[in-house]
Length: 158
Image (cartoon, rainbow, N blue to C red):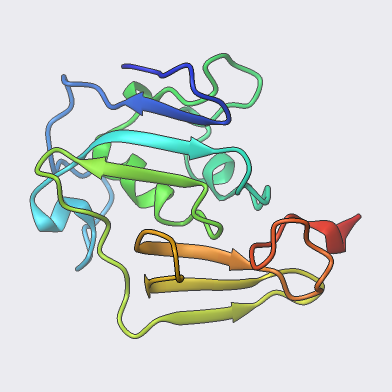
């Protein structure tokens, strides 16, 4: 596992000992899963500025995502496909992964828009915001008080 010193974005290399595309026993692979596509993630990244603390990662794989540990992401504690599945649940896009073959996360079609009452507008799809790279997930400010507009910074929750 490799971790860069850049903050707040951190890279975590997923274990070379993991079998690409292996789905943990007792779980099924669905279309769109990295396991179904035949490849597994190589690197997971976390952008602390984008995290809105929905805790999908903590609930999804507590053995990998543990805020009490340092480093707090230990991808070798689970199958690569399971890590990718949980990373894709991150509504803000703070967690991402890169694939060994250079491919990116496959966003859903059509784009899914979710309005969180008293919170952000969540987008999940093939997203391009002017002046930025293509993204699969983002959380936009709905209250107008974010210091990171158009992105949400949880200003509405304080």
